[in-house]
Image (cartoon, rainbow over all chains, first blue to last red; front, side, top):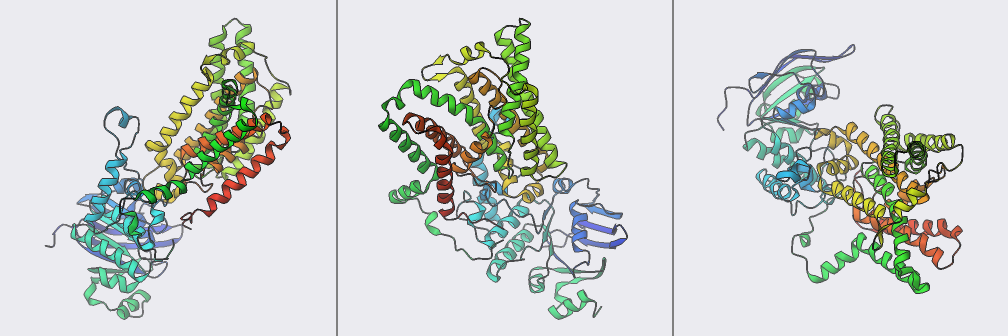
Length: 252
Length: 341
């Protein structure tokens, strides 16, 4: 993929405090379409605060957030969704009792045509069919979208969740610990979906404590420590040891 | 989230064979419930052949219509992940308030139909008020639904006694006469209740409103992340439940020709029982409308049937307890009911 000249997401001197605690200090970086960026740091380094600012859960105290060339101020997470940023939080995931298709379209249900649609009747058939197509595009094959999420394995569940984000995102997907709690083989399924999203020209922000996964799937790594960006370099410049050293501050 | 590897069962991809379909049917809880219902009716008819007579069927349907609205209300609430203990006492308080309204209008020569219509709106209004209090306690004061609706349960019971001074308000022969006419085995009132019930079932399973109710009960975090206004939706479910309980109060008013403070008291437990028998998870997020309809039917048939085979009504609760236990045990034995934790 040719490197686009304009960043799809740009942060300029973002700062955020909670009371007297400074969570983020002058965080700046640029992210491009078709790029997978690893966001790493120790607990309390500011990863969660940063993604909350990008996804609209919190507002930054200072600094600029630019999406696709437009400066943005989110009023709610919904605003960021509408601007093409999908976020997969650690604790949200899917509704286990609903079918895969219903989960994919949760909050964006297709309605029947005509009067029934106006009354809120859902077009379940189209949703199930389109869910299968769209999931296939990002490399997920599920046997039947009529299954409930409860009937899937942990890896498949997470793959569906990431697939949903990839399907709806226009510009950026933020993945917060998507391979947490997953076994080795299940993690591979999720990493496969991340690569497929990259192929589709999306920018992926990958937050993880599992450094081998970060090194495997990302193009560039941004290291946060005590609320500041301490390193922003191509993944090829890191090894697990050097990355760990940068995170903990042993080497800079 | 579970980390257990469960390989995809490829057999589910293939078109089901005849045998598989038969096994699938046997595992279908709705189908089992339906068989239980039919078996119960045959049992009671075997012991007293009048049970299947049209007169008794009409009574059965009247009793069914008294119970079904609060059961459906309870289903919406439980599917959304909550519980509503106040539906029974709302029947009492809304019936009493409505009885006063009807009494007032009829003594001022408003005519039967307009008075009853206003009474119906009064019932729905009282129910909406109870539902709104529940909604505020749960979404604003952040009380757990059990405690919030326990508050309104006691409040409703108390206010019904205070308003009525402990006695039935307004004996209304007009209401009794109006609800005793009908068509074939259906009374007009029964038909109206059944139509409303059917609409509620369709809304639950085929519309956006129903879908959000299931989603919130299944995983409120996922629902919120998907852009659903969880608090607003939960509040609306409790108001809906209140309105339905209020309308049930009007059904009781018609059937007992007055607003009695003991009407419907304790019936929240029957509503919850019907929901449990119908296979709805008390954790929220699952359940079929047909299941609870059969659940209500089973409870109604058992209670009416016991009278028919000359078993003392004192045994009612004991038999109902047995049915609930049985249904809950059958449910827990079903495979694939493990939940995400």
